[in-house]
Length: 72
Image 1 (cartoon, rainbow, N blue to C red):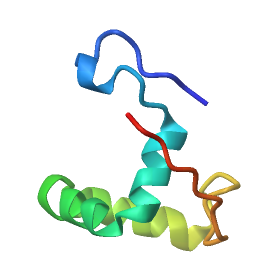
Image 2 (tube, rainbow, N blue to C red):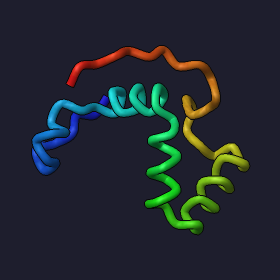
Image 3 (spheres, helix red, strand yellow):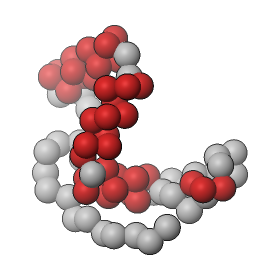
Image 4 (cartoon, rainbow, N blue to C red):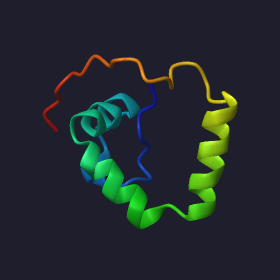
């Protein structure tokens, strides 16, 4: 689990990858909105090819997640 460094705004100082993943699992519309607004078609195509070829790292399958709620 990676902690965000001090180069990020102080509002994000306590965030970890796991906390962000948990939030996005509980709020998939936020991820959808962000990707729709911020990710290029080329990047989406690259992600799709990567996923289709099975070259994503282990743990990125569609297995259920254990969600922990965090108060920030």
